[in-house]
Length: 345
Image (cartoon, rainbow, N blue to C red; front, side):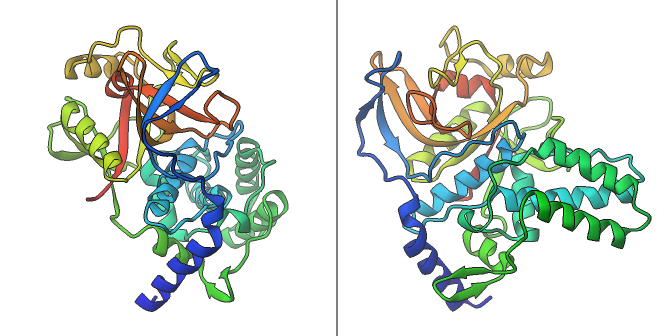
């Protein structure tokens, strides 16, 4: 793909899709006047409309795509990306894997943030308006694909049948991305919005050496993606530095704490004293910190008492006091973060 074509695509996408993005509120804006908790937004990056993943376990895809979308909004080049396109390609990939493994690989729709980046690089991307369907039960569809794989005699027959099922349930795939008369392949479109090695996955645990990569031992990391391991102080500094520089952060962590409430739009721990590296490690090893959910961190805020919070774009719809956004206390992020993906700066 030529540089001219890449630049042209950036301009076209920015012109045609910028209106889909939310504007960036002014700094020091007070929000939640009618809510239990009031916050002053210090920084709130631009973001596309909040989506709703429903009961589908695709938060990793929603959050990483939301991170990429905000990244482009902050560059003045907005995109709104299709989760269904990513999910379809993942289903096809896992169906082939299930068949070749003679049924010993379980098809599922869970994943981690680096998985989205790989799928984007391999299969491309589609704009949200070109390929989306709100009424899909991906858990049920995954079971359907497993049954189809078990009943198929060869790979060619399986792929033919699988494509028909996916067309019926999600919709037929557009062969190209069209923008103002210009035509692009999904791969060209994806590489224009997310280049290889543009992002880095990071974590902070002591059962592996710091300043080295290791395969994070969480159930959804079945692709054995590596994460760069750093002390928690370094990780927290990187998160804040990224947001202040206009770069969103994709967050993966624990939401099982009583202090996490989507209804109230907040996540806080009982005690807001900064946790230590050892406390994080102990919570991870005794499974009181688990890998549950992913969101995009898009801002910084504080409450009336001066406590600091990170603003997260969730994917559970807009039915909370902050239109689907959530305010996670600084210590909640410090204690309950399992991993993040940050822009390489």
